[in-house]
Image (tube, rainbow, N blue to C red):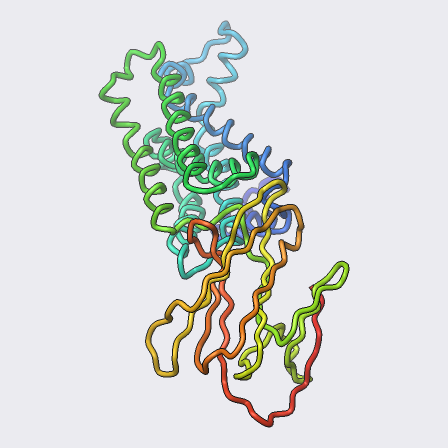
Length: 366
């Protein structure tokens, strides 16, 4: 029975099954980016990964693993016995971190601006499943570690401090540099084989990864975590009750999928409603940035930019509405942007003349 189970688990497609099962589990269990337990688990993963990097880089532990003796202290024997399994443990921890980041960043991402970074996270998640042989190379592992470490600080620091922006991101980058340097110090301490030249050769890919992420941030390619857009649409009317917003829009009986107006009738007032999630204690300003493209035009042009102060804590997101009248016929787009210009999401609709058309209005509560 045991041999049958081993043979079944060794089948080539089982790696894909476990991969998708793990990602699916994380999707269901990782709820809020500011949830303390989730962040503590990720912090534990980072700590364990750092310890494994030190273990991987210690030549004395490697030599001991090759010739462990019964009279060695118990802790030393445990480390020696664990050493051959270090790459597998590293692969597991990296997989857990990349999976969580892919989910958190996807919720904050707009593919127009941050698709490259999101694609990178997904690519690293997939690549980790095929890099087991490379994860015994400390240079490769340290570069991965710098990536997951800075990706963690990018949303963890705003969650903890209630502040976000370029300063917080650069603080995270500086902390990542400090952590990487400390790991290298622990690896090199009392280890004659670790010359300064070898340390620099090992460290530069990690520092290059940090530099690339800093560049991504200032090109607005990194999603504005921990903010995320939960809902958005345009409506004929928006009314606030004690607990909900009542959103009125056109909907025919067969349009079961429809939750906002598109197309929108010309010469009528239009309300743009959005809900943006922010962690508890975080207060910031977002913008509804309106763009217009005339019929037959190639590019959208700026029409208006409306600031909205939001505060965090509500699971469904901070709800806000802006109002405009007499929109020109053509294509319209509302980008929901963070204070530093990164796009959380978009609401697109088309304005058309619809005189004399019967209107069936329904109301959605949010």
